[in-house]
Length: 427
Image 1 (tube, one colour):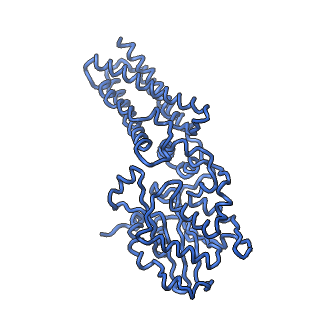
Image 2 (tube, rainbow, N blue to C red; image 1 turned 120 degrees about the vertical axis):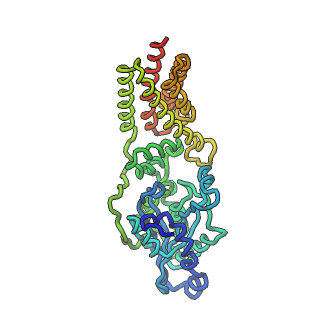
Image 3 (tube, rainbow, N blue to C red; image 1 turned 180 degrees about the vertical axis):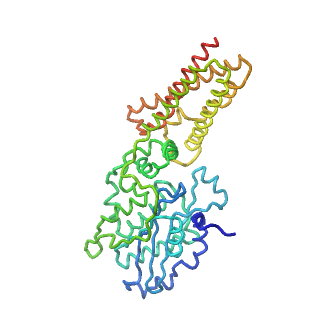
């Protein structure tokens, strides 16, 4: 079965597996003791890849390239491989068991796929002595062995980029972490994520909504390097001292293979999201209130308002259920300690049946009961949002995410006002 070239990016795991036997360096020929001091044979490069179309490519990618001048072959080691077709992949993913693995492919084949998908590709040459290059090659070769290649991926602590970061640190005998391990970052982890998601308002809000307050604690530059671009940013200005006592720059050269066209840039700093959501929420709330004042007693109003309530319950109920599940039943620890679950949670799903009763039942008693319950539900949501804002004055509650309160609280408040008015009119 043939696939269009533009969809080839989905087949990267298969590409790596297909070429693995051809691309893997041979320990007998590549690392033979007689070649250890052949200082011109191997060149190691970092391959920085820009963002792609799919959500999981928005933060870019990075791999290790080994160029062999004797054979003319270049191989790319990649620690960011996952397989949609693996057993129980979706179940494992949902529960936070993210089984990724390391694979190796011909670099040229890798580049062609990225070129066809309009991705940035840049190469940065590592300025290392041959002994260190061979150590890295041995390490990478060992990582692609079937018994070693799989690891439990973590979005911030252990991913394709942090594996490269750790390889660099190994090559410079711990000087990389000494330089950046305690250096304060200019951003929190949440802010680093949002620098790359700003171009999609929904995912910008939703991903931030899922992240708990642990992503708002002060981060280090070392932790920033869960992002491929942060590794290159730091590596370009990093100097290390070799065993011979000479201080050298880590990067000795750079080349651009491709520059993408029409892709969103990465922001220098994240833009605040809450003002936009607050304006949207207030506008929607005022519209709902005006419709109530104009037609609250008309028969056509109830089906309309009931439908609006159902849609609100569906949206916030589903997003709240996802957060509730990830917070209390999975290993996605970046969602833990999340104050959003207090006021956006599965309880909002109750708005769906209540909205249907309010909008479409002919039983006046049941309709009045739904109005009272809806008033209680929306009051709870508003007070929950208010509580999470005021709790931020306490040192234990430092979640820096006003976007969800800005989105929900005006709507919840106007719904309380509307339900209170409808209750009085029918009392």
